Amino acid sequence: MSVIPVANGWKHILAEVVEEASKLPAEWCFEISMAERVDGALKLSATYVSGDVPLDDHLPPERKLPHPWRSLQRIRETAREKSLATCECCGRPGKLVDAGEHARVRCVRHEYVVDAVEWSRDPVGFMFESAEEAMAHFLADYGDGIDMMKELQETQASANEDVDDADETRH
Ligand SMILES: [Zn+2]
Image 1 (cartoon, rainbow, N blue to C red):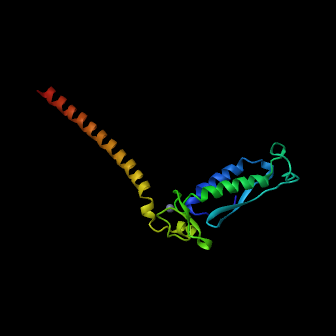
Image 2 (cartoon, helix red, strand yellow):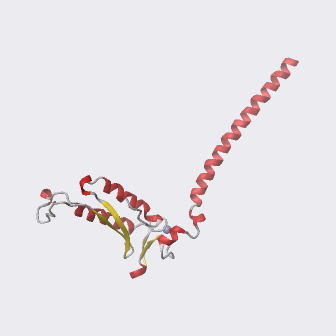
Image 3 (cartoon, rainbow, N blue to C red):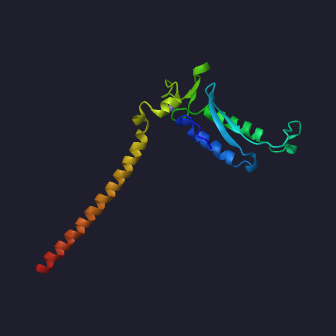
């Protein structure tokens, strides 16, 4: 698959779509080819081979044959709905702000970011964004530190016991 640039907050939407697409019949050669932002929402395109499968829209649902075009519509609509509720910058719940050319989906914190792809490359306040993650790492390290100190104390305690034993034998 070619590399499709999307902003950080939407990467998981794209990943889910690619996963979904991988479950489609192999002979369709279904591949997500493009991700655009249209009216603030994610719009996906795909390439596929429909062969001679007719797009039998006149048939009732139970008689329709699976068709890659319909799969694309379904996948595209799911991704669009998700993107409309997901901050393009950070992936937290967001809503559509602004309109027209600058329509974009943002959480409260990233409303000011106009170009999320550009922002993702060099995020302003990235350290702050990752503070929770940094804290998690810190706690993990600190947790290990606590265990290490306990072990150290135990080792020292048993060493002291040895010393006590030695004292006792000397008495
Ligand atoms: Zn955000």
